[in-house]
Length: 243
Ligand SMILES: C[S@@+](CC[C@H](N)C(=O)[O-])C[C@H]1O[C@@H](n2cnc3c(N)ncnc32)[C@H](O)[C@@H]1O
Image (cartoon, rainbow, N blue to C red; front, side, top):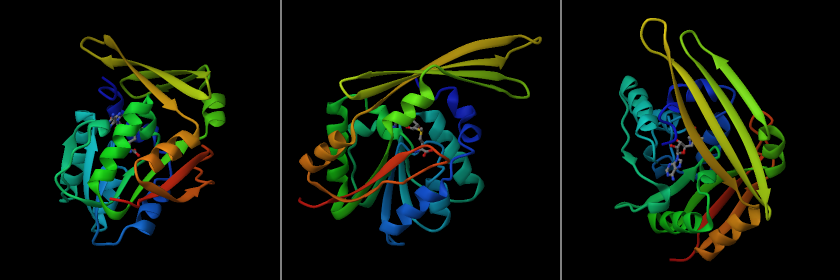
């Protein structure tokens, strides 16, 4: 299962990401008293600062380990949020949200059209009328250039991990394969090797747009220059426009 190991180093791996940009765009579209949902909230890099500012946000993620990190951060700051373990493509909620967001390549864990469609349908059902849905899509060319035969090694005080990636493009669909190899300390100066694998898919932008529209969303804005430390991406702002 993905993120069973990566959760340990996720925040340090993401230390270059200017999360403020995501936080500010949420604040642009959400009233202060709005109730929000962070889809694939991870370690709460967006959720925790927003909760700290007084927003009411629920979080959902597939990884118990990532949720545990968010829970710890909230607890340390004496904050609360309702966190749920689950898949975004099976989203079923009991309350309605003014805004749902899904950030930092999380939408790309949906590797087929059916899962994207189910997610968009679930988000639609979870939103109030005129509620917003925001997510980002990385630039295919940038990812292909960056992650074809890429290797990154991070040696920490008592452990080490190797992150290897490769890409494959077929019919305008880019698949990114990640292999993470961790060497974690055991006993008597021995290390244990553990691996995890992730697959992400980047569909052409028009596929996401068409699926949004088919599910009753209108496109409010596509922020073209949503750069995060050089990583080109587009941020899509959509709105529930029919019930
Ligand atoms: C790159 S991280 C992004 C986390 C967070 N949104 C951020 O901005 O730091 C991707 C997250 O998506 C979660 N995830 C992957 N597939 C998922 C799915 N099908 N449903 C819900 N969460 C998923 C992972 O567990 C991980 O926490």
